Length: 354
Image (cartoon, rainbow, N blue to C red; front, top):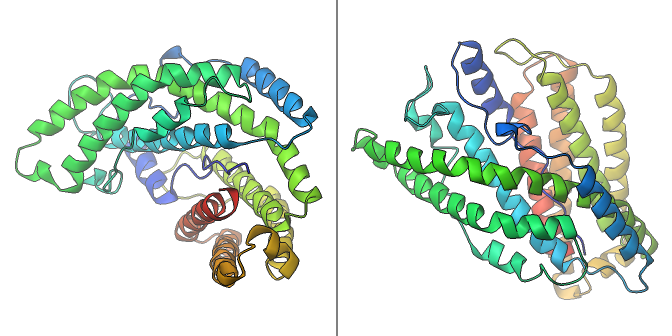
């Protein structure tokens, strides 16, 4: 079964407020890997979309169900790339984007503690994905980009892991940031090669996800996988909500959270409630539960765990909507929503898609 990508909710609002405040204070640092035009290396996703759509059409015409083992292995790499990308964004919020090590004005190195909180890199994720490169289904664009990504991916992962150890255990407190400068040099030299392939890989995988999602939803619904179907719908709407919020925040010119235009958010909230109601009903239906969790011994515990996760998403979204409607500080409730959605995706990928 196809897993759900964790490309949604790339940043917390609390971190955004810090970033914006630093920007507005006149601090300057280079563009990080979250910008699609970094170093002018961004590529159009037209080719990736075409290749992905052609592949999805071929798979849909096949007599046998699509085997998503290869897709899921590639998705693990993508999720790891996004994790690295978030860490780079956080890093270059505190440290200037330049060859020489220097902190952004007003920033302290200790601000990186949360960004690099005990991160551990696993090269096995890439090794496992590469085993599928020459296997069906054929993803021409994604296969080639994955091969190109191997070396810069592993290099970046090792550097970030070293940074995490240095920062998480606060080694910087006793060396006057000497090692911090050395690690910065390694990181800065690796960013360009990483971005050059990581950004097109992100675009190609997102295009593949979009091209295959409709077929996956149709299959789940036709085969009675209602729990999986409504879970995916709920996460998809959550992604739309996130996109709507950040599109509005991208135009803000102050260092505080602005009031939100609730027009589109109210429509999306209604769609979310409908998907949540469908998921709640499916989780209470013995036949739907039996399809997902055929082992009756563990089914009750698994249903309870997944139901709790879905309820937390709904509750945190309700809190966010209430705060946003009343023009109150909605950052805490949004961050709770972020955490709840991430937890639901993790459970879906480990309990349902596997």
